[in-house]
Length: 134
Length: 104
Image (cartoon, rainbow over all chains, first blue to last red; front, side):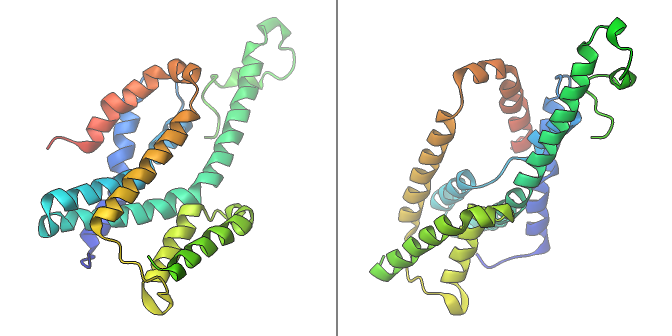
């Protein structure tokens, strides 16, 4: 596959972002998940071996000229996914862990009965489950 | 697949084994490393790998590896957690996945 044009790259980028993230976000509307969790679930859909197998199946079933365009898109998508998901896995996991820890702190505040909240009323000023900075 | 090809691949795996902890701290993952190594060793001046696998062999290899990866991932999921989050998976597989694939 030697044809590499901007449309292929654009579609690959879109398939890693909006084409996956928007449906996931829509499917999770109404769950008790907060925005950070939904964003994490939506972003981490690494494209790898499964895509490669589908690509080889397409080449096998459809033959070279018909499947070439799809193969080019899949190749670029997988390469981008390897880089993008690989490079962001650790930083985003760390950030999400910190986010969860913050939230757990808030929940702990919220669970204290109101009369015990003489000091540290910070947990009451924002609704539980919705961090101040996400 | 020649002996030198096997030696190069074995050296790569060994090299990753010794350096992985340091590289992963720099967010360089195994897929990044091996995809890059594969590109460099098959294209350009460093193309020391002489394998040209047939499409059939490639497909067999990819399918077998995918089966292994999926099995090892699945074996790490507890039935208890699975049941607790079942509604979530139903939404993702039943709504998000068809929406992503789209009508054809």
